[in-house]
Amino acid sequence: MQVGRELAQALPGAFDVHGYPNLAAARDALRAQRIDGAFVPGRGSPRLLLAGASGANATNVLRAAFGGAASAQGQRLQIDDAAPLPSHDSRGIAAFFVVAGTTLGATIFSAILFLLGGHAGGASLRLRLTLMALFVALAGTVGAIATNLVADGLAASFFAVAGIAALLAAVIALVTTALVRWVGAPGVGIAMVLLTLFSLPATGGAVGPEFVPDFYRSIAPVLPSHAALQALKGAVYYGGGGTTTPILVLLAWMAAALTIHGAARAIGHHGPWPPPIGRHVFERASAEAEEPAAA
Image 1 (cartoon, rainbow, N blue to C red):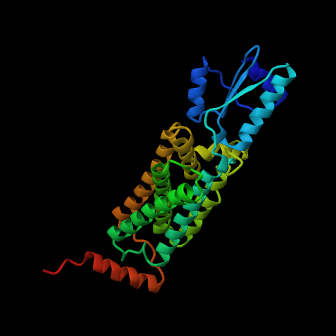
Image 2: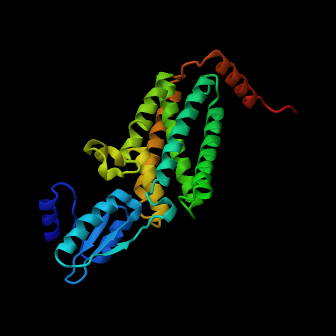
Image 3: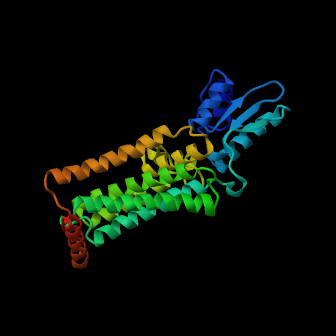
């Protein structure tokens, strides 16, 4: 761990160094998104394994630190990018745009659903779930089309992008509607603070999670926006590496939201009534949905 000690002396607190027994183990850790880079010392030509998909800022820091150290010793650093970014998305922000757009869209959908009466006791559970399912499917499809076919930022991963975007949309919609079910209109504001103004910045956006304040960096792994971003990167750039834990995080959020919905239903707690227009719209829609077919 001589390299780690030298880095700690030269740049205190800048790197979190781990040791691996061989190159294969380090490469596996890189592809699983557990590390951003791996330095392989050598007498003639040391190597630096990195992942461009981790973000331009992270890779630039690694190149500068280890490249400068190699030059100071008269060596030439060999760089191997195990997860390169496409040339048309050299900053790697396409995945973040998917997460941000899906989060905002799902929050707005949930607010509209409340204003139209979709959370009221007069709206059947079947109708509410049907509307959310339709929105989730639409959000996943639109997100994948926008990035894969229009911007081409997450090329060749249409179904993976659509699935992860749909899962994130379901989490945002279920969490928001669960809050609204209990506290009414303020639940929309709480969801926006939690999921838009709090969860999104924790991802680091275009700069990367390594460069956000310590508090955000410590809680980011359990937040839905960060989980969705890591899952997208893993599915598109890392060959599926590092996607299991983020998807489990999203599923945990979904399960928690469904539990809150189930608790409200179990004790007979109905959401606050919406404005009159929305109330009448969903009362009529619910009645039509539950009306038996004529013989």
